[in-house]
Length: 245
Image (cartoon, rainbow, N blue to C red; front, side, top):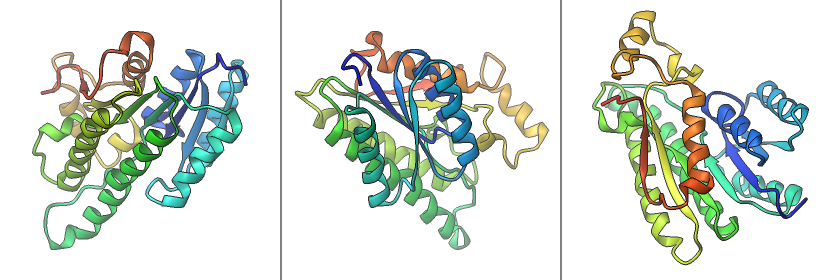
């Protein structure tokens, strides 16, 4: 591996925002370590696509809330490429349920995957990234909302935002930036699942730009944060949402 080729680990890379991020960073010259949980076919297609374009990529399956799986993910990345420059954490779930006794299972599962998973991914990034590296976590603009049914999801993402700000301070002296990107409504399978056409249309018009975000919109924001022009952005939650407020 040439010392000039940077390496990016992208969690949740088999679809949606994670896939768009992996493809964009591969286009920008990064070798890609693509993590996935269950969509093996989607991950295989992504790796094949990157390699067909002349890039380098590997796939690693794992549960981001499991200590051993996250440790193995970083081990695979370092064994394959010998270095790690960027970690972009996109993996997550969004089950919805009202706040109540019957919603506790949804709360526990969401916190386990989204918040515990973020902690583990960020903790290992802090240990393994080269000095001058970048960490980007996918948050959500819905944190600023109070939509019914989103309690567990908002709690998990708000907790992740707190981890981002603290870790940015803990990286002092290593020139590692830590930021979050908070998309608004984005046309991904995760977002569209379970919504009616009427609900989707209404959400699409909440932003002044009057459309849903696309995964490439978020990938471009991530590319800015991990590129040369993003080096002075640190400890921030960047709202990439078309004005969704």
